[in-house]
Amino acid sequence: NMASAELLRRGWHLTEKSITELDTNEKGNIVNIVKKTLDADLNDIGEKWLDEDINKDKIDYVKGPGVLQLQKLRDISSPSDNEYPQEIPSICLLTLTDGHISCSAVTLEPIKELRLNTPPGSKVLLSGTVEVQANFLLLSNKNTRFLGGRVESLAGPWELKKSLAKELETSAIVREDRGPPPFVPFGQNIASDLLLSLKKDNFVSLRKNKEKKSTVEDVQFQQQRQTAVKEAVQTKIAKENINAYGGVKYVYGGVKYVYGGERYQYGGDKYASGGEKFLNHDRDLARIM
Image 1 (cartoon, rainbow, N blue to C red):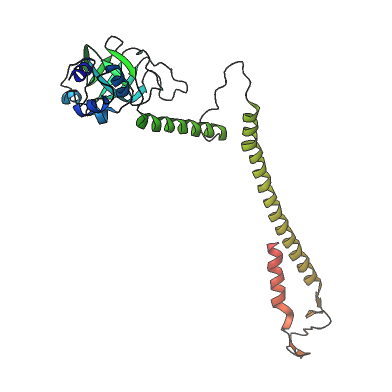
Image 2 (image 1 turned 90 degrees about the vertical axis):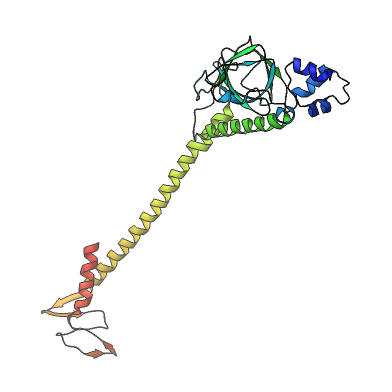
């Protein structure tokens, strides 16, 4: 029909079924059909028109007009770790699809209206003859025009993922887990809440941890010191209660006696000659102290 022919002339390779659905209530209005198509996913409505050998280094050029859908876009004119990439990159690596076959393309110059924040699902129109080298389409403003469009099922998740990644990166910077501090343009003051956050989360917490560690070490040292002092005092008292008289050893405490090395019972208690066992214990304890 006339709608199909006009869409094809404009580079839209669509299935007959999708054209019929898009033309519902439009009565052949091509402008309205194109608006709907810009926001539709070519994976659902596109007709295959790219050559299957485009990724096999067998194709030298692609003949337009033909509309392709953006799948991925990456700036290759700046280092991958560049914190502030160009909003309009000079050289981009793109992954494009007709809904069936995907191919790679590289921009030889900044393409008008093509930005780093261009979401997947956006459409580009190839016109004339587009050269292919090493399986890459060579795009320029002479053979490529950005059409736009928004496929919500593709753009929504992509934007959410990008937003979460940015929040995680910002949080990591504040915690100083990784990455440099956030950039502050010259002539502007650093937000006081950021400084307070850095101080609160790092310096104060480090000091508290150090104080906590010191307190635990002090308590352990005091306990060990008191135990050592107590044992030393007991050893001293025990030695003072041990006396030697005339070469005869005895224990003097008002109750226990050892005399002449003889073994005897007094008050129902047994005592060993010379108190040697008790003296050996004291010597070992004193040596440790």
